[in-house]
Length: 151
Image (cartoon, rainbow, N blue to C red; front, side, top):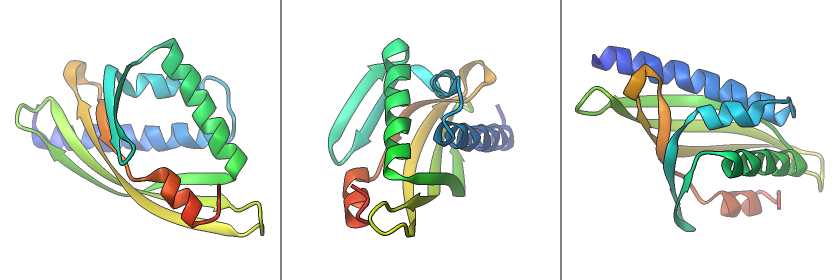
């Protein structure tokens, strides 16, 4: 696959992924299946808390629902892609995406809307033509939430 095609498909993927995030924050039905469709059958996550891997399936969909419910409880209102840098990898079937997320969260203690900007790096496979996340590296989410008085 040509680098321009890889970039275009990954950009379209993250546009859909951000829209799925918005639906999840609005507690719309079926979001867990859309999130699951964004991930490969097996994927790896790395953060300051360590490295974890897991299968994409029923347990993952359950955990996704729980995760979005937590975000709603702490007041997350929106999560938008502020910047997206896509690097096609050698074979044309993989890419790295550096995503700057821009979120707004309503702090329960004072009702103030808090803006948090953070980055994640994703690795995607385009095997079969459709991008899916097989690994990502995230920031220390818990520390960020604590620093802003959200948890």
